[in-house]
Image 1 (tube, helix red, strand yellow):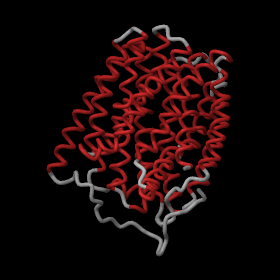
Image 2 (cartoon, rainbow, N blue to C red):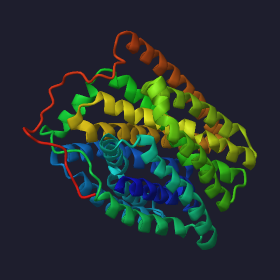
Image 3 (tube, rainbow, N blue to C red):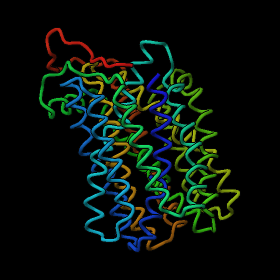
Image 4 (cartoon, helix red, strand yellow):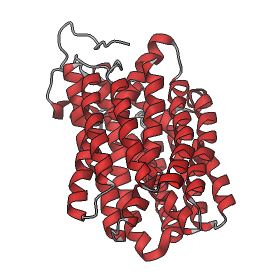
Length: 400
């Protein structure tokens, strides 16, 4: 299925660039604050562009073509971005890169949910191919960087993302039934029962995961990790991710989507604190085994909750809203806060303080969720909403 190839290639390409961005920017001579801004502007731009891409797909039914265009732009901009030394120019290219990247995962998740309904495959089984790609990409990029230097990151990302764009064009992305304006789609989602607390939980999840993703390599380099160790860290984390994705649908079915999301936030608190407190490379690599519990399980909970509580004709927009929050606003804040704390307290102090802040946010979200659940807002039934739908329109289809 194209969706399996897409997930695999997406995460191989992501492994070539995203975990190394902070380190690559640092080596280009940018200050800690500038690194924080550059790391933050990418997810922030994704947050702003994602819902627009989603609404266009819901209105036109041409999600596959939109995905191809976006990824082609991201491929070229990403390769240019990591070779710049001027801050203002790098910032502008980073914005272009993020705009192109914005629909890449939300559209894929929407397509995967369609495959789940049509062919009976579990979301976790499909999404696990991303974990395989991440695990393959880690050693591949680490080895290439050891042989060819840091320039290998940009080259690999360019080639792999262009191949990914071709595969993405064949995905069946839902759409073509919504005839309202972009802001109508977003407004409808925000008014759904319980979505305020849900998006707050996704934001906390994205903040913690964004801190780990952006600064893991900085922390490993701080304790003396080589390029090969950096690649190995991704592979170790993948072992846990693959195992968790195999069982994530069952766990979510048993404990509930929101409970899985909150459990992932709690595990992220532990991971951040230990990542900052432990100094041995071996211990930090073992800690990577928490990746499945801190990503695969809560992510499955998030996309499942979005599917169950959003109107069918807004599926692309719903997944884009999750992507907006998890991959946009939250990690943007994480990158900015992390960059500021990095300059003052080092990577270890930054990680411990971030974990403490996440613990407080998680506790508040748990209280809000419990209160809403008591009032009947925890239901997975979609409330009636005035959603404009094109008469007789159906889901979009594309070659598979």
